[in-house]
Length: 450
Picture (cartoon, rainbow, N blue to C red):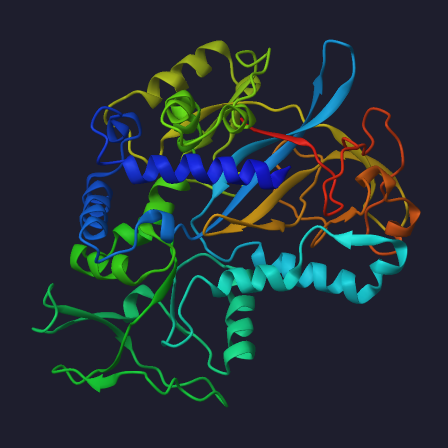
């Protein structure tokens, strides 16, 4: 089940992140080098965490959104089962895909799916409640937003306003101010330009607004969520970054380490060590480490810090000489992280019969799924994406359903609720999940890292 995968993944990742600097023998910084300013910042976070000024990583993991593809695995007896394989962990932006899942599932519930015997793969309120555990509701909330369009971001702002009666302050990097304060250990207090409350929304009663010596009206930042690309973060001054790292609820260790595409390789390398130390049991390690017989035959290059399919190059689209040259560039010492890539096995996805248009024409497309987690807690599935392109960034439905038996039991009634038709067949290319059912009525399957 995805819950089992998430438990194993969370245990492994948390162990690695917490040992990143302290485990000298593991040499993590050499195996996955970062920019110097990033390493210095994360070392500062490590020292602050060890001193008790910052939470341990196990207490502040933030929100992750692992993506997975579904592939066919053929057993020795000839039977074929679906395998869900994680391709990357998205963790730069704390709200992406979360609110789409909330509203999509809510719409399906309102549509009356229960009368067809269907249950949602995700409980909408559980996702919202999970996001609200990221911050304290008794303090003003700032959200620092940069270039990312972030549709879910504004959905979350509205959700906070509706639930608390006070909208978060949305600010940009240019709004940040460092104000001298001799009472603070660092000598600074992080503030933002005060823009006044949103229309018809009362300002937080405990906000701290004052005039600086420069005559600017600013408000102290007590907690902040970051919606910035890595390059936008490192573009800030070091003193400002040090103040931000103490106040941001999506931890910088998540942004710079967990989101990095190289981390999946680090996990695979650490599994046996983690079993020996009791971090994982053998079953959890097996969940994260299924081997594939063709692992060295088909590869692609993927940008270590990208997202949304940016920077993916398939090996079969290059000549042998181009492929070797591309690999050699990756080991060049002068290569910056903005151009660095990981080599990842190309997954041949299973294709499913779907109806995507009102005309009723049937197509066979692969499905790309994602699941949602906050501070290590599994919240449910997000939206499915599908297209006939090799790189898919299009979300075809806002959500997805699991029957209270198996996905293959979701028949014609689903077509009345969604634009996707799922047929009851075990034939190749049509939806047919492993018929194992858990105690909550969800179908099980087998999930592994790439």
